[in-house]
Amino acid sequence: MTNDLLENVKDGVAVLTLNRPDRLNAMSGPMLDALLEALPRLAADAAVGVVVLTGAGRGFCAGGDVKAMAEGREFAETGLEEKAYGLRSKMEVSRLLHEMPKPTIAMVRGAAAGAGLSMALACDLRVAGESAKFATAFARVGYSGDFGGSWFLTQLVGTAKARELYYTAEIVDARQALALGIVNRVVADEKLDDETLTLARKLAQGPRVALRYMKRNMNAAETQTLAQCLDLEAMHHTRTGFTEDHKEAARAFVEKREPVFSTTHIDATVRLSAGTDSQPGPTQYPKHGSHGRRAARARRVTARARRPGRRTSRQPSSARSSATAACANEPFPRTPRS
Image 1 (cartoon, rainbow, N blue to C red):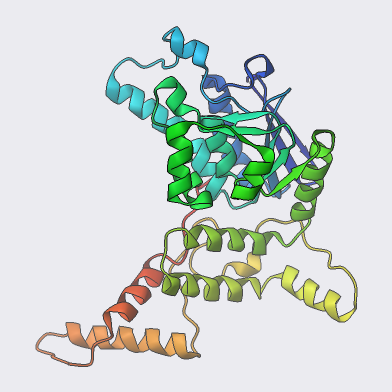
Image 2: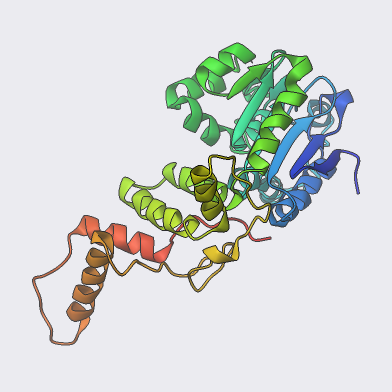
């Protein structure tokens, strides 16, 4: 156990607090180890619908511990390969925040710099107090950057602005961050906790299975083609149509009332394939509809073409073949197993 990370769960919201306020919550080995233990556990906890990451005291996270850098204590490992491997293993924190099947929110007051900024960017949403300051900061200490900041920042602001912020290490205040799209909301510092937790509770009380698939759709949109994303949306949309949450929302709409969604994170009714939510099986294409007919026809043509001595000119287009194969092989991006 460590005091470098505090954890509190209430009303379906888990709050993880980076707790080294005397160092502006600069990262430590015990802090990162605690995050690597907590995030997969919370991802699998049915009592948790949303994870909020924040910092104790007057800052969010100053990134690496510069004092430890100066004293040569930043890495326990000695050789180049060992240091790189050790750092990469710690950087899984960013991937877990980005890919865990629940919304993640960074609640930022004060400084979010270096790897601290990277962790904030890894979250789905960022709510900033008016005192928030954002900086890549790596250039100031002669580092190139870690914890995925270059990837996340490029996704949010575009490559030109991301390069500028990395090369210059310019400090961006809360209002500038809002204008750039780095944060979603800016609120008064004294209202930051209330505003962020109100948002978190609203999401935690929402349709959790649908939110899970929304996040997978959004993450897929960062790297996949339109055709692949359409395939994912069709499958996920259909799956969520089988959930009790969808049925409850439809009843509530007809009855002119607010829906009351289940707080169970994984709905058994969405397990339509050989796999489960956390370990998907092969895609089950619908029997009807244009996509189902095209996919089935492509599979029949491919099977005929593979028969010994069989030749056919009826081949699917390369674009259709690649999209079908991509969807069949991986119906949606995998999330870390608990």
